[in-house]
Image (cartoon, rainbow over all chains, first blue to last red; front, top):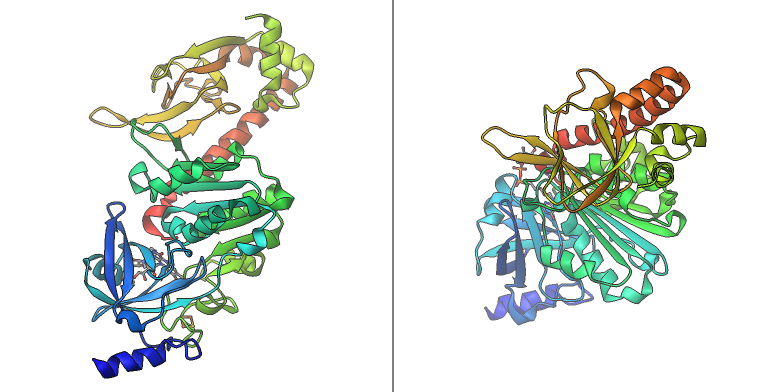
Length: 293
Length: 156
Ligand SMILES: Cc1cc2nc3c(=O)[nH]c(=O)nc-3n(C[C@H](O)[C@H](O)[C@H](O)COP(=O)(O)OP(=O)(O)OC[C@H]3O[C@@H](n4cnc5c(N)ncnc54)[C@H](O)[C@@H]3O)c2cc1C
Ligand code: FES
């Protein structure tokens, strides 16, 4: 153990950052079932006190390795100010995410990261911010929302538009409640279909644009969700004169190396892992309409 | 309610934005004020569609009845929205339910009365059909997105 601890100390020293190819061991410190197919896990460094804390910028992701099964790119969904313990919110869609979903408190997994670009929260200071999330897309946006609300006075009006499939698929209800009570803030939630007990909005997320006031030229937009939804959202924002350079989207592509070497995540001339996942919309717009990409 | 008030509400409703004042006056003759309590239906699937509604206040759920009772809500509408275009086309029957989610005030426009005025003045008819087409196109687009079930099959 002595030797391992010493080696870990060297690996995590600031002048010698963690090798991006080698997963660090983390333990599941807490697990929460968010919806029927989505859960959150909070991870604690299983390397012990010899490891440094875990810091990241909102929008970045980790590669989570379910030992013996495989690796998936998963955004960090916790509060960047909380430090130390990364939180991930994961929807079970296939082999790796199912294996990650089977992990219980105390189980160990591998973590590489954080990787990728961040939401331009700093650049939004002094301006209005509109955040548009669809489905699990709220997870990568939550750290940005935490950061915006932590420094509330530095931003103008904050608007969150969040669409999900049904009321049962809505994530982070407590956060939504808390944010909606903040000053100069609008939170609008909408679902595609609902039963009669739901008294909120029903329809597509873009139909919420009619319900909010947007001071287009002075607004920064952060969007994450299915690509179709992001495309239609960008159109609405452009119609409301939000400058194209002020619109930012987060993209997903299959990943392997996450470090810009293997080419798995190529999107036009960009690599999503290294140049993204957060891109200015102007940069990716030409490829948004290419069908096979 | 005074006719003048009705005219004012019709003129101010976003659906009729920019409509010539002569036409506002003309169609206000087909307008009537109405209110629905929470849970009350404006109409149900299969009912004759002889009206449409301009929402002034409150919220409306558009429900599609499903087998074994119950219904699923596929859209909610708010002040500034309109409800229904089935009054425009045969067989003039509603294809969904409309239910007030809270106390809702509307201007109910009589379909037969409006059709009569549109037939008599085709310029008015053209203007109205264009307005309805825009709403229908928007709803069709939204329905397509809902049918894609983007959150169900593709992740963000
Ligand atoms: C930068 C980035 C950030 C991401 N952040 C998150 C996150 O925060 N939370 C999260 O749950 N997921 C996130 N993802 C998606 C996640 O990486 C994939 O869902 C995961 O890798 C799927 O692996 P799997 O082995 O479970 O599924 P696979 O076995 O690879 O796939 C199983 C089935 O699911 C389908 N599938 C695969 N990927 C997706 C997908 N993304 N959406 C829908 N269907 C899919 C496949 O077509 C296949 O039919 C992110 C992806 C990227 C690139
Ligand atoms: S995942 Fe290898 S280049 Fe991006």
